[in-house]
Amino acid sequence: MDKIDEIRRLWRERFNDSRNWMTNVFPRIYRDDEALVLPDDNATGIISMLLLRRYDMLYRGMKVPSGYIYGAATARGMQGKGHMSHLIEDALREAYRRGDYFVALQPARRRLYGFYDRFGFTTTFYIREERYTSKHRFEHDESQYIIENSGHDPAELASAYRRLTSDREATFLHDEADFKTILIDSELDNGSLVTARSVDTGDIVAMAIAAATADSIAVRELAAADDDAGAAVLDALSKHYPDRMTVVEAYPGGNSRLKIFSRGMARIVNVKAVLETVAKISPSLTQNIRIKDPVIPENNAIFMIDNGEVTTTDYNDGEVKVNLDVDIPVMSAIIFSASRTGEIFSLPTARPFMSMMLS
Image (tube, rainbow, N blue to C red; front, side, top):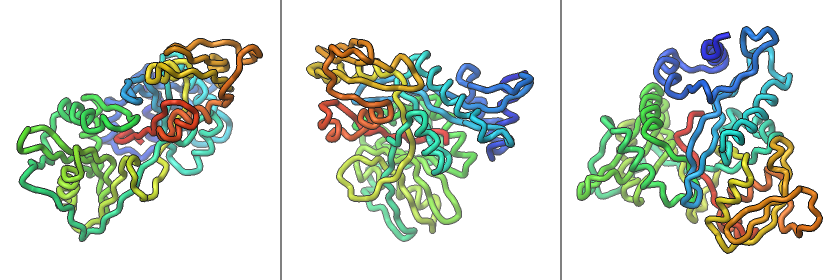
């Protein structure tokens, strides 16, 4: 069995990606060591597949390795037999083995949130949706910016993105290779990436990436140094795609009263590594936390945080007074809650955000 050929075959069977996408984007996102498959009984083909891609996440100013599940699919006629459940558990254990702290994903359909709940995932990623009519004008000081709709340098985009999103409590990072893929994928999807460059400094001070339909512009990411710069790129998009409403999937931080919507799910796969990060963020923290994890045995323990370090003892150690006794989905929800919620548990937590991820 040729693994990549079988993955391409099942990909074409289950997804609607164009031939151009398979030629120009798929080779950029595929790595053989990140592809998990479940062979058929004859080992001549595959029943289920997924990609466990590697990303860095910025969590309270610290960069931590994380996994992202993408391209999960089971062959027609083979669904409902537990194949994907088996593969998801394999992926979680593989993520632990390779050193990931978290695994995230975006369910393709609403009903799949319940499916991923079974494996300890919890809904942690949200967006704040802002809607503007086709008549809306994004007022800004036009003299301050140079708008660029093409010719972007992926390395500069990656650097600017990190700078413009550095105030987010937790977010996935995108490197130069990611931005090369994002630009290709956007072009194939009738999309656009727009930047605003400061006239004074020459730096990129805002960027927006959007996909367009006949009646709307969906802005998948808006990162800006301030509101005026953000308005500059939204105005450029509205002019590029005239007579369409603009829907911005914005970072849910701040004090906006706009409703937030679920974007994705996450799960801790390495409790000790996550709590060591927490201990570095808050060196004075003292907590004894007992965790239950039915998938990753190494996470079933009492984790003792003291003086910036984390040690473990047996899950049933009756000599240790436990401050917090939770399972993996609850712990994941706490770690990825807004910082003011984390204060209830005396933990330095962070609300995460994901954007420009393959979905």
